[in-house]
Image 1 (tube, rainbow, N blue to C red):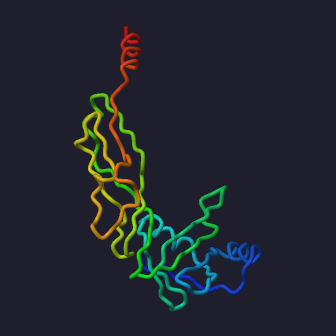
Image 2: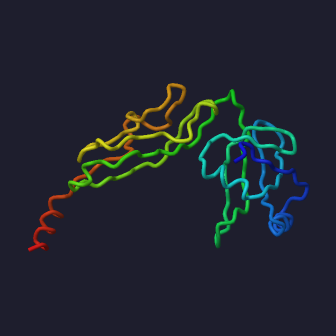
Image 3: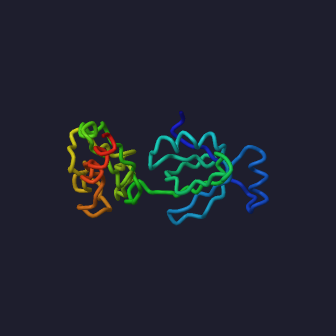
Length: 192
């Protein structure tokens, strides 16, 4: 897989021009930010898919020989299928802090689930602020040792010192709940 997304500048804009691009196998998009002009672009959507799956916040883009670092700000899909119909790319400077969402990767299965616990995930991603080169693809959270009644809060996450977590330290990320007594009694009665 290439580490750079190649796009072409497009002269024609508007819905008719975008429809024509799509008929010819291209996807319209725009590149903006960093106090530079908005650049309408087109690209092959198959080239964008690997970057969406990788979840890397910052990627390189080649606009007909001009390199830039971007984050994928928005991707619009056809409501009747999986086709990408438009994408917005936001330029970033590698020496200016940005705030972006980062996925949480829950590692393991709490042993307490086998004894009646239920995992309740409150957040699957968090917002962090930092230099683009310091932002990870994901933050791993080991949950294997969690017992019933235990929880993980934002302050418990292992975040680099170079990043600022944009979430209150006491904000709940996940918890392991036990069964409610009323539910246990009902299940016992049903078993009889």
